[in-house]
Image (cartoon, rainbow, N blue to C red; front, side, top):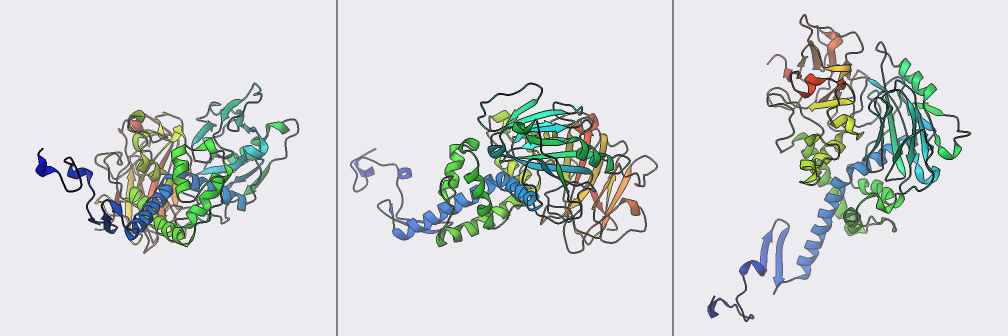
Length: 489
């Protein structure tokens, strides 16, 4: 250093990396400064951009909360306004409702708890119940029930406690404390001889949900059959997303989320103690933020850019639980939360449980998805495809394949009310070696008509394979599905 290194206005040399130029050309336009102080125009541009960034981050970070809130509102529209009222899809979930990657092959039974209103809630689960789960208002795992739960399919009583509960807890319950007041319960029952009747009867006769305070005289259960009805359980992908999210923050206990997330929300006007009322400037910014964030979520799912997406080196099938962790923690938490992996899951799926992510041989469930053919091209609903599943699919209970719409992430709406095939229906045509070929296309093929899943000309699609009670060959990759291959090219 010498005197020549001292810039005008300073007594000592100042590293250039410390100083701000008078003019910067940036991705958001020109930025002008007077001796380091941003001009009024530059400040306005920077603040707009900051609010935009926070709007995008709120959307991506809060998809889990918005998704389960949309689920709650969809159930509420169907009359589920108390814990003893449940929806039951006793004739299975068809493609009419909007329901993120729901399956066509188990009987769903579900509802919501309001632990602030009702206090601790009791759930009586009958023997033989398939995978069941309770998730909180941020779509976080609370407890499993049924097969993968502590009752191990033998049935039992569960007690779900409100956050911070300090009252008496009686003996005889499987107990879990939630971090939120609103909680979603979803139970699944398996088909018997390819039919849903036994599972539907099990739920109607055996499931009981009631406040613990009413244990001596619980309310009569009410089941609303929704098969064949239309309702929406999917959050908005435009600026209405923020309107759907704000009531969650207003309603739930402040401790449900950390201070940083609360600060991020408050920065765009979503504050627990204040109404969400963005002015014209902020509304315009949030409108664009939602558009960009929605596009980003779609890029994350459909064009994942990291190496840990695919299940196999030689197949197009991918996982939904990046890192194999239901909390999406990198390297056992040393790398923090894998935010894009969490977005990938919750943008297309529901139900958060270890039983879907961990290696639980013979219990729980496993999933793989694909939206590309063997050549790496996205599926075209105008074309014909074939998928071969090798013999001895490693599923203790059953396997299924369902086709979905990339727009709604719900079941593909076609001439088939159930765009799927599964091993329980008993009508699949098998190959001589025990493998099965599934066909996809807009027109019914001349062969393997019982193995055909219809697609829609002019639309894309993607598919998910489910294994209930996955066995060791699934986990060690000694069995793996073939790629979806285009026919006749």
